[in-house]
Length: 118
Image (cartoon, rainbow, N blue to C red; front, side, top):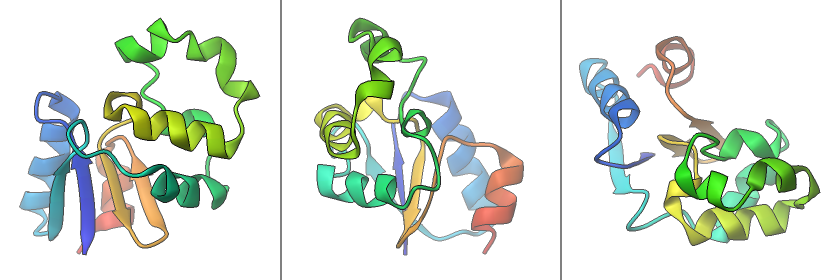
């Protein structure tokens, strides 16, 4: 089963949810702010090395800017990044869709079409 981490006040998450429903993709929805993925879950995804660390971060978020992560992200290792991301769901680029070792951060219809089509 696919796990769809999202934030209810996020318009991008709403678009992704609508796409999933329109394409009859089954998923389990989890509020990324109330119940973010654990540091261990995030570390597993990061260690797959499919994407740079920046891919996982909500770079337009307030917390990202407050922590000056733009200047620090290149100095983080995978463990530190996973712990930081797990500490605040708003730091994670959303929506985050996971099924096993397969995942995507953010929403682009063409990516969802190729990655999550039922």
